[in-house]
Image 1 (cartoon, rainbow, N blue to C red):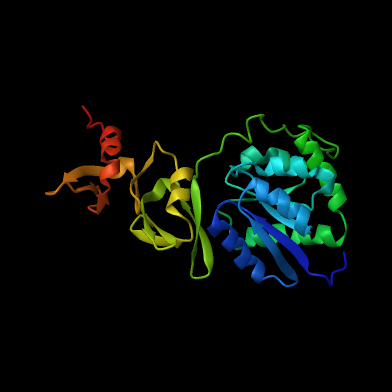
Image 2 (cartoon, rainbow, N blue to C red):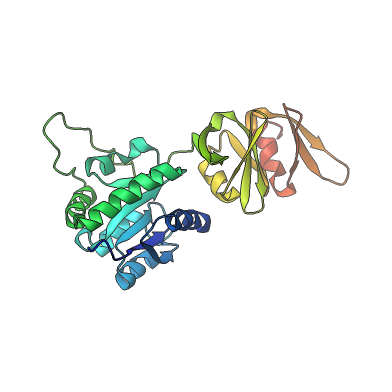
Length: 276
C-alpha cells in the first residue's frame, strides 16, 4: 500500500467509551481515516465487507459473535490486518503470541496502543497482511503457526477464549502519565458522569469507564455494586446503616458512608451474612 494513502480503520467494540478511546488515540496519529464503527459481531462482519478497511481494532468478547467468530465468517484470507482488543489476561492469549498477532489488553495505556498501531501500519505498508492472515488462520484452526527453531512454547488452553479473567489492575492517567492501580488497593468506586472515580489508599483516580463495565470485570466475590453510582470492596464494609424512611447506607472501615439502593439491600445483607 502506498504510504501516501491514509490507513482506513474500523473500530469494533460493544462499549461506546472503548470505541471513543480508540478514536481519540487515532486522532493523534497522522495518515489515519476512521472509516466506521461497529458495536457487535454481526455489524462488524457487514462493516468489514462494505468498508474494506486496512485495519480493524476487534474486541474479542461481544454480543452476537465474538471477535474470533467474526474472523471465521469473513475468512482469515479475506481479513484486513487485525489488532484484537480484549479484557483477557495475557496468559490466556498465548495463541496470539505464537502467531505473532498483536492485541491490546484492557485497560491499555497510550504507549502500548502506539506500539500495536505502528506495528500494524508497518505490516500494511509492507503488504505483509497476507502472511499475518496465514498465521491467524493457524490460530483459528487450533494449531500454532510455524515457529522458529528452539523450544516450542506451550499452546493456549482450550478454554482460553471462553473464560474471561477478572481485573487485577487498572491503568489510570494522572498529569499526562499512566500508572497502574492494583485492584487489591481499591476501597470503592463511584460514578462521575460518563467517568468513574477509583478511591484507593486515600487517593482518587478518574477513568473513562462505565460502572456497568467495571462491575462485570471485577471479581464478584470481592466487589459488590451497592448502588448504580457505587461499587464497594466487600471486606471493607464495616456497618450496614438503616435510616428512618427505609433508606440504607454502608460505612466502610475508613469511615466513608455510601448510599445503598433498596433493590440491592437484600443481596448485600446476604453477602454480609445478615440474612436469616
